[in-house]
Image (cartoon, rainbow, N blue to C red):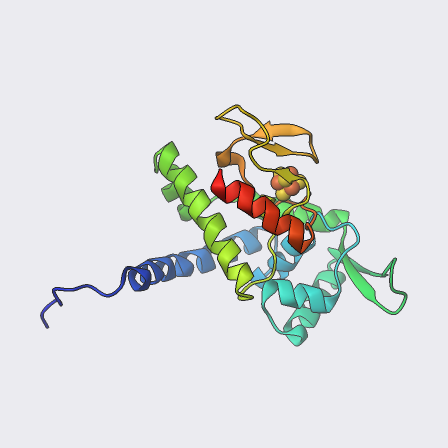
Length: 214
Ligand code: SF4
């Protein structure tokens, strides 16, 4: 069959490209999870709970991971048996129960975090400028998907109440994190920060306006 002279829309081909990466991500998720003695859903639950000292309800965890509540419940039961998570009554709502990470859970997570796979290797071969550009593109795409309701709010700097975009004149380190009280540059923008504190919607919109314009 002849290759059409006009390719499909660029958006379609980018989607095709990203979907090629998904299969690698899936297999690397298995490797990371196995390093911690878990399956990928159990490992993702530990990642989701990291940095959330007050824990999350089963419903919130299921929402964050985009999996069903029964699957989440089964995975949490397995993690409880391994003493990697513990259930505690909510501090703000006596009827609610929160799932919290234990010290053993943090240690298991560190085992998975220590594994670096082919995606990180391939990314490491990009130029510094390309890495930074890719990071900014990912932040922008994730933000758009959040706005469209396709994914929940992620723990990124751009939705964090500690983030002060373009607070400094230093071109290399224009941004400021009020949590650690330090300046940082575009290549240090976080996609998944365990110290993230979700800003209210009006602050998020204002922050994004300054960040994106800058
Ligand atoms: S606490 Fe984390 S997410 Fe928030 S601004 Fe600082 S580095 Fe970014």
